[in-house]
Image 1: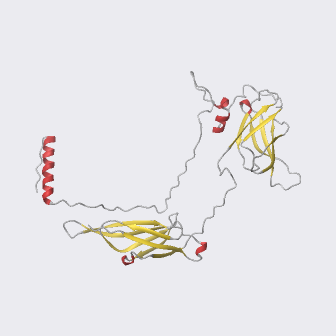
Image 2 (image 1 turned 180 degrees about the horizontal axis):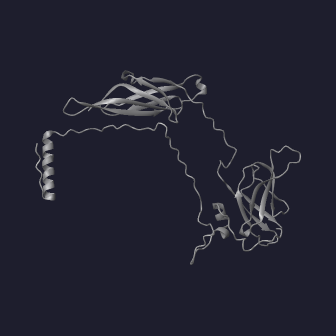
Image 3 (image 1 turned 30 degrees about the vertical axis):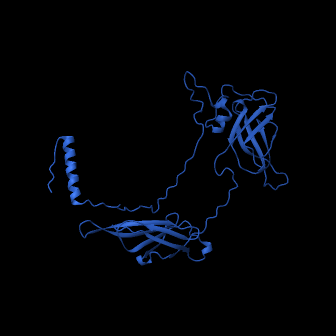
Length: 319
């Protein structure tokens, strides 16, 4: 059985001003019909064989089309963008195989990725902190905590401070909130309307991820019965930073489902699926083995004897 691999090489160029267009990552697909003769007669079967290659940064590509049988001219070639949109289709005669192919298509404008100034890259980062009474008293839960900041780009003579984080204390004086990636000139915190407590900014002039506020906590009227209500959706930082609030030793007895201590850490999985012009590879038959008539008779006899000894029945094959 004849089996010859077709090797195709070439270059893809962008039309117009090439420096303003790019063809990197374009896909070149080729398909050819192969005629495979059937055994013991003159009939043939035609099967489609395919191959594909990706255009590199220099615009060059290389692909091969394998399979059995005699290839039939022409070779169908398609060029698609990285998103799968077909931009060019042409046919190539078989005598062009082995010679470089030049294909011109309308390239794409190069995508420039500008580095983001947001260190979180769209994800949520938790700011955790704690309020400590300088007298050593226990800090009650539910006290309002507000972190203020003066914006770095505020060009006024007397820039005003704005609240950037608003939350409340948990048991033990702990608190948490979403970290805000804004550049500040200065920052301070207030607890239950207290005097401002200065907060040292990090090297990037942003709020630190951990904040410690030491002050003379104002006396407030708190409801002890309601001061033990935990946060509704604690983060992993809450679970590790304040275990007294969000964890418990189950031991014997009933589980307290009012304490949300079931989540330790969350992960986000993302998968991209391209549905435009999916690649469906054609079926290529493998090498076929022809058994001579004399050998086939012996195999049938052995199969009949094996079935007779195994099942106790014997089948008579009529030739």
